[in-house]
Length: 281
Image (cartoon, rainbow, N blue to C red; front, side, top):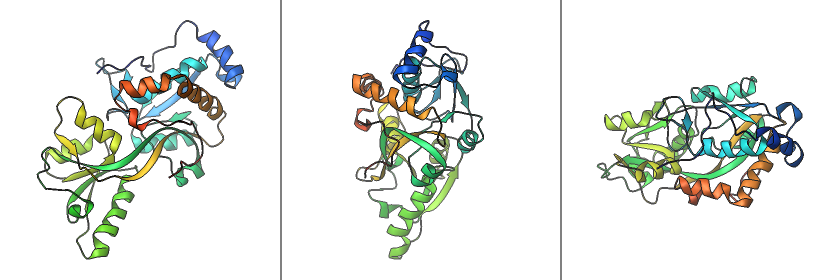
């Protein structure tokens, strides 16, 4: 599958970026200090379809870079990408090292209290198991006593602990055993080595992994929890939020957003409003 128009740390927008920037200042409310300038983006690279390195080992590719590339084009700015560990990107925004963090980060009230969040995509959570489902997992209850991989710094350690309490220990069954990993694709090794029986992850990731090329994994039908939206993370009250919100909404309205979603096979996860408020359940 080929995704379109990626921006790397050394990349640039097209030759009309100055004109786009002047237009952006009026149409989208982009502050003058950013017109024709750079916006610094932090992400954790290594998990498709969010962000992966291209064939050159440098260019950051994925559906999120595609969305941001189109926003940047409309605003007439360049994107400076930084690949970092997931657990460092939000503190980096707070410290002013980055303008935006993006990496399949769910909107939640705790984050909304600390940052300004812009919703750009929908998703839910599911369980990924090895192909053929050798452990015969068909429900959350089947995971009681099993090893479940969860990525450190994400919602999944808490989410799986909650599932374990509600479906296992509260019913007299053994708790799920959490196996933590740090790297975005660390669950792949854990499951291949038999150290994890399942992985709590985003449905978007699971669906992509099981439908693109040959995969060693599959999702468990019927396991669907914690519906939410993904959000771009800005420093609280950042003056970039409004122009990014308006540019994203213009993409939704004119079909550019749907085109990107379709190219990545993610049409089912589109949103219709680029909001900064908590998503409606």
